[in-house]
Image (cartoon, rainbow, N blue to C red; front, side):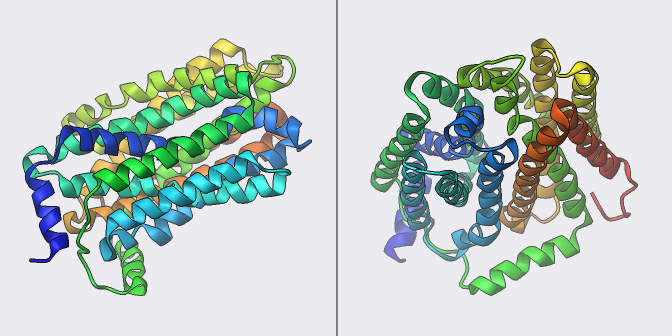
Length: 403
């Protein structure tokens, strides 16, 4: 037995609680890097004298980078030692965040945002690493703990970045983020074992399997399309909220924009209930309910925006509802996708998550354009239409063998 395999098996026999917590923290910090910029977009637009459409490219390129990283780099975890991949991405992510902190103009910030997105995919390397290290009897609990860390990173990132940017400046936020990833890299270097590759397939062959899975499974295509559309709505909101609140009539700072992340957290933290509903009622029902909540939330905000902009209380309530809808649909879509071909779950997840972040990138770009052309009503209308599209996908009769 090779030394790599021996290290791997020994870790399986006794996965320590500190290592699980380290992996959960790592997933959370990596995922958080995707969202730090969003509450600061109003400040960044003023710093670089950028239009809403131009500053909207920051979250758009971050999400697009993440989607590209998932599609182009995720399969490498089966081909090479996952520890080396995680450490390499952590180093690149830390440097990209430092580049964002030092950006002298919007062009450099855009380049840094794209690299942040690509390298932040280390979160999606950490989750399968946890599943691999955990013994079968603890795998579900271990993955659940790591996913909780990832979710908390997403939820708290906007709150932290809004507060730090308000009191110490936006550059300080990026420096703080880079430092946290650097410290994480050191901890992972010390605590993470090596992983034996599970395949010798060349890169091209690994990539070809992703297309084959899409062609083979109608359930995967439907899930990817519906979740991608819901992600358009999700990102259109979060990528424009700070710009909306920064201007008239609100004139609120980045801390206020970040605080809206707590409203979204209320919805997202309730989403695990969707897992029980999926078990009892079936995941199809949950996907339809989730999409319906998104349509309801943005429809209400659109009506409220007929006079110019939705009242703050309605925006907060809408954030709770649509976050719940998006997260519930994601859980249900994962339930559908994971049942299609158990031996290919990591690649199925890569396709689903890539479609989700392609939707995020599209929503950021389209939302910024809508805000510039038609104001907040345009953003809410765009998001409501995207939610209706997702609902139509889930209501459309599936082929006999499709999920």
